[in-house]
Image (cartoon, rainbow over the protein chains, first blue to last red):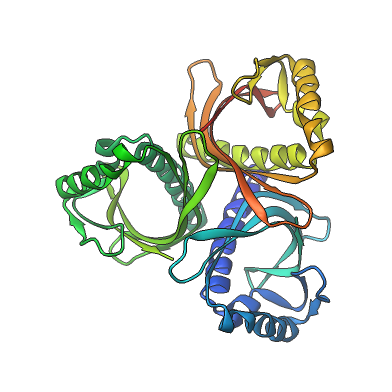
Length: 139
Length: 139
Length: 139
């Protein structure tokens, strides 16, 4: 396999991975989403909230965070774009991309909720990509 | 051709296909857009409107739908993202993705018009991808 | 290398190229961004502004354009999507895509600033993609 090919295979795999990951997050299927993180992962997703650590900790944090949507129902959609991948020396991959969060409340039009820069470190476990870390910086 | 390669070739082909399809829809080149559907296709694109069936029926429905833009001129842009592809047993491909519709009226700034989840079934005819069905679910 | 493969390699290379280019533009790293243009490039980026010509001219024009952000601080993010590539006879590539510009002012939510159709001509110099021209048409 050439270097170009393996680099391209990875770029596509990451796009497909992010598609499934965001579909789970927005469903919401919080357990499915948290399973895309490694057991020892770190997730920093909102300014002012401390980092969530370990897969179980990330799930607990997400469940807590999503409580606010019980009183303010909305569809949320995460759009990731402009993905830049850099392979690191230890075999992991640094992925830097933009995320737009679009929400729609019942009976209303959609609105932009957040514009973010996201910094992931991705690793491969049992042949599958997973997030070892994700840091979300809201503009 | 390896499985990885053929899966990746397909993912790229779908991205390129959607780019051309949306450019036609937004031009608008409704005939060009309806030609991306198979002769027996089904298209459900707006809540409350019955499904359009057959390529000719889809074109007629689109022409009818676009009449509203004669009195309310605007540029429309469809942004597809987070594409998840699943090959089906019969050789067709299920594609699930997000769509944002952005409109701009003369002299005004752009606004988000709709946030959608779209479910396509794609098939290959004469070597080209086409939509056998498209179901648009508006948030 | 098959035609399909080289076409796909190019599509991915363009996606990665645009990711890095927009990250530089939005940082903003105007010198880095202007270095993605060829020495003799032409850049038409705003209705009513004359085209910027040559890499040095493009940088000077960008520095001038970005002065407005000193008095109106904001984060800007360029989201490119729906990329359609057409190889031209002279070896260059015509790329047509949509761009959304999202801005966020301190303490405020994000807003859509512009919806655009962008027409690039890309060439390869020393193995790297560069813009020989870019024409931005704001909706």
